Length: 73
Image 1 (cartoon, rainbow, N blue to C red):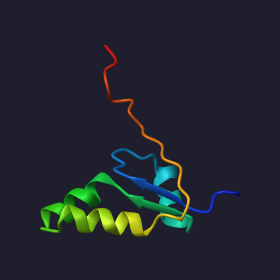
Image 2: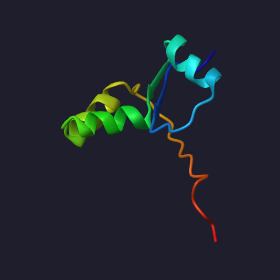
Image 3: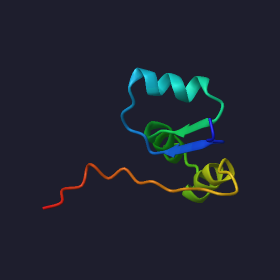
C-alpha cells in the first residue's frame, strides 16, 4: 500500500498473475522486452524510448536489478 508507483523495464518472462497486475494496477507501469524491441525495430531512437520510461518515474526512485541470468563462475 505504501508503494506509489512501480516502473519495470525489460521484463522477459512474467507469470499470468504478474501480467494481470501490470494491466490492472494503475501503480504498475511495465515496459517489457518485446515492447522495447518493437519500438526500436520501428525506428524509434533509444533516447526517445528511454525518455518515455524516465517520464513515468516518480521523483524519488529505488533501483533494483534482476541479474539471475549471470553466471557467477
